Amino acid sequence: MKKTIILLMAVLIAGGYSNAQGVFNQISNPLKLHIGSIVVDGHNDTLLRIIDETSWLPQRDIRERTDLHADLWKLRAGNISVPFFAAYSSPFYGHPEKSLSRTLALFNALYWTERNNPDILEIVSSYDEIEKTLLERRIAAVPTIEGAYSITESNWEDLLLQYRDLGVKSIGFTWNYSNELAEGLYSAYGDRKGTPSESGLTPLGIQVLERMNQLGIIADVSHLSQKSFWDVIKNTKSPVIASHSGAYGVVAHPRNLEDDQIEAIGDNGGVIGVVYHDEFAGKPGKTYVKDIVDHIDHIVDTAGIDHVGLGSDFDGAYLPVDLEDASKVYRITEELAERGYSDHEIKKILGLNILRVIKENDQIAEGWSMLDGVGISPDFAMGEIFERRRPVFSAEIEGNLEDVDFYGVIDGIRHPVEIDKGKLILIPAAELTEKFHVVTFVANHPVRGEQRSTRIIYIESN
Image 1 (spheres, helix red, strand yellow):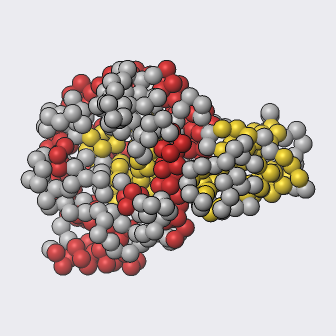
Image 2 (cartoon, one colour):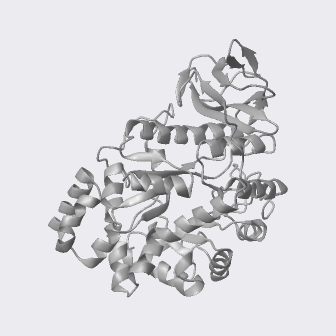
Image 3 (cartoon, helix red, strand yellow):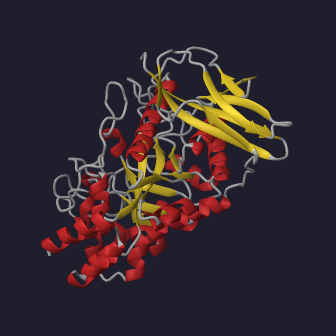
């Protein structure tokens, strides 16, 4: 069996999924089913392991085999074709610009990974883009946010649009600590005093949730306090996900969801991605794949087969003894088959359920008109390094510019632009003091629609 798995992995990596058909008759039905399924992983922290912790610049290309839980080789070997790559940031209380910089650093690392591996991975943000990327036999990488400490009263409207430009598909308002949007699991701010926070979503959090629904950005309820969870359920118009949570009825841990929460996610049409972290799934150092499937069983019994998926927490978790990394996820399929789940039920758990939530959020989202006939081409690339703290950003413009208004956005704050000889000129209102920033040029026509071009940049002087 071990030699067969190694052979199958080699075939997949060398020639794609179709070439694996010739060895299907040598393997067990569960493994054949796993390779023939779309496997979606609702959460990993691998981006944290790619960047340098001093500069925050990307330094580790995960094309090669690494000691990480998830690299491109392991994702391919485990047939994880739609991984959610989370950008997690500490709160940096009193300095949301640092949280924004850290979040952008991680997204920059994902774009750097895509740039280095265009034959293997593409960043996607919609069901249609996922479908297209899978047909091309590439990994569909979904950008997400874990802990929206960068979103504030002063920047939320335009920053959400910039996040959408970057492909962000889901946002978890908090990690365990609270912020301007919501109360986190600990019901306190992460300052030195552990200051208690107001319960539930704030008025700003409700506004942000409403706008996320309009933009097709999924609300992630993992890490929220009970009151915040119920406020999301009450106010959302779209299905939610719990990207990496377990069932409290199996393991009584505060990070897991109680039965009434599981039922509410089912009623909402959402999905719970079952987490692999041993403290949540079982017992530290004594957790196995069967424990993960115990959580799946419980969620199926409580909410139904349509409301459970996978949410590993790779590179942010202590994994089960018999699930060492992403290449071993087929063992979950084997355990599901052993317990009598049908092929179609297993396919739902492995990925179809989360794909449905993505598709439904896309359908509920408000459409927006792309301004045709106008082109914006920034004179700097994604991830470009600037030496000055107050750089001059420029972009070439062309096309039918009649009655078109232009403006710029830096870190969620609008700035005026000048037009000079076919170029847009954008100068920050003040020095950019953090490492990473997000810059957008916008062309808007009151009838024809809007054209946007967004880049992440790095200030080297920091």
